[in-house]
Length: 222
Image (tube, rainbow, N blue to C red; front, side, top):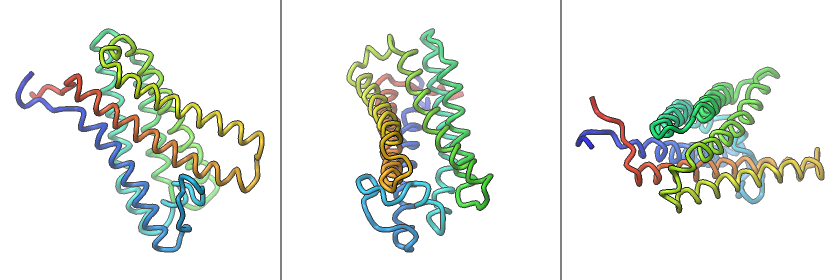
C-alpha cells in the first residue's frame, strides 16, 4: 500500500455528513424565517425536506451543498462497483442504479423552488427516483458483494439492517395510502417518511465509510 494512496472511506463519510447538514440546516433556516412551523419533523411530520428547503436562504444553502453531493454520490457508487468488480462480482446494477440515483438527486435539487407544473413533476419524480434507485443500488451491492462482505460480518449486518429499515418504511407507505389516502394524516406521514428515509441513507453511507476503512479500500496515487 503506497504512502500517498487516497483513503476512499472519506467519500461516503462526506456524503453522509453533507446530507445530514444540508437537510437540517435548511430546515432550521426555514423555521427561523417562519417559512415552515417549528416542530420535530421526524415525529410530527409538519414539513417535508422538500418544503423546508424550497424557499429563502435554506433553499440556497441546500442547493449549494446538495448539487456537489449528487456528484459525490455518483462517484461513490462508481467506486463501489469498482470495489466489487475487483473480486470478480458483477456490479452493473450497482453502477446503473447508483448513477440514476445521483442524476435524480441533481434534477430534484436543480428545480427545487421553481414555479410551474412541469417543475413540480420534475421535483416529485426526482425525489421518488432518488430514494428508489438508492435502495436498488444498496440491495444490488449487498447481493453482489455477499461473499466478500461475510469477512466483515458486523458491518454486513448493519448494511442489511439499513436496507430492511428502508423496505419497512416503503411498505408502511403503501399501507398508509390504502388506509388514509388523501387525508391530512397521510400528508404528515409522508413528510415524516421523507425525513426517515433520508436518515436511512445517512446511516448507509456512514456504515459504508466504516466498511471501506476496515478493508483499507484506497485509490492508488499516480
